Image (cartoon, rainbow, N blue to C red; front, side, top):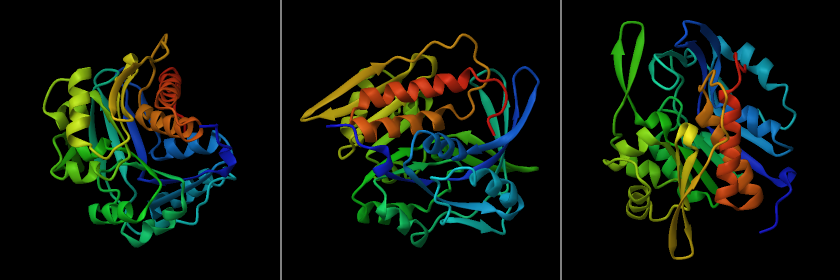
Amino acid sequence: MPRRKFSEIKIGVIGTINRDTIYQADGSVVKSWGGILYNIKYLCEAGKAIILPVVNIGRDCSVSLNRFLKQYGNLDCSNISIVDELNNHCVLRYSDQSSKREILKGGVPALSCGRVKPLLECDAVLVNFISGRDIKLVALERFRSEYNGLIYMDIHSLMLGRKKISGGVARYLRRPRYRRRYAACADILQVNQVEFELLAGCDFERKTAVSFFKRELPTAKALIITLGADGCLAVYRRGTRIIGRMVSSPQVRRVFDTTGCGDIFAAGFLIEYLMSDSFIRAASEGNRLAAQRCGEKGKIF
């Protein structure tokens, strides 16, 4: 398939924008924005595609976020809604470069069926579960039934349970109850290694990933399992065959921060896939951008 002109593409984004307070393993503290703002930034900066996020923003953060979002001429802000609830605030404490503990404060409402209807005109929609309650399941399923375009889904925070504690909600890894219904809405599903092992109930190997894809994702185009410094495994259909292929990542001399790497990977993958129709080229681009992020010191936003 010939590469498409990026200016002809419209990409929708579903998810949540976080305030992040990050306690790094070295003792430093970073306060920034996060969540789908990583997706928005990299999608907007990749070219002239129109980016259409559907998202709720807490009134307490609306002025600062609107000021940031206005810098992008190809960002359609018509479906960004200001709500009275406190914006999502994620407090992350890293014990090392990859292990972290999360506490969530505040929380905007989940998107309803009516809110996501404008996305029906998009060529592709990126669904990134940041809070785990970004969109109601019934709304996602109805949208899937009406939408003929591509849905790329990062299942990330659907894998996190919630436990009320003093000062907020602690989040912990667990196997989500309605995982099959959520996954059935995706054409391309992104998970990391830990998330895959929870979903599949077995250790990660190429053969277990291929088996899981065949068994649990019969209508999906691809399953992408991100593996940090080892790159990712792309499992996809080619005719009647199911192929599992490792895609390596560029080496990073020094890792400063892994926050947002999965979000950035998703943006890079989706852009390249829409232009080239190649899962391998898309995975390589996602790896490249995620590796670049790891080597950046200090906050992005």
